[in-house]
Image 1 (cartoon, rainbow, N blue to C red):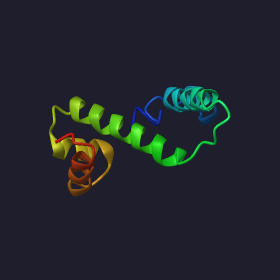
Image 2 (cartoon, rainbow, N blue to C red):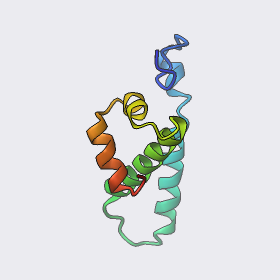
Image 3 (tube, helix red, strand yellow):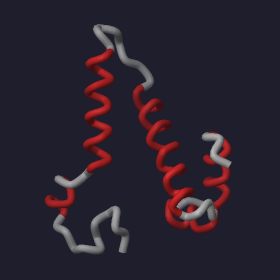
Amino acid sequence: MDKIQGTATGTPDDERQSHQPLASAVKTALQLYFDDLEGHSPSYIYKMVMTEVERSMFESVMEYTGKNQSHAARVLGVSRSTLRKKLQVYDLE
């Protein structure tokens, strides 16, 4: 089963939710971002977060798979076509 989802260990849902380092990192980063605004209004937060997280995810998976796109697509659960498009968008080819 998928180690990221915690299903391999049979960890109960409530315990899994308390061990979410990615969610915690995003929350902390957003808190710092809001603190740094100094009264200015935030905008396009969704796009900013998704772009930064998605790029890092594709970068990490490509490194993990030794840049094997077929393997990376399987790991990500996306088609090879989608993977190639995202690699182009983030200049990770």
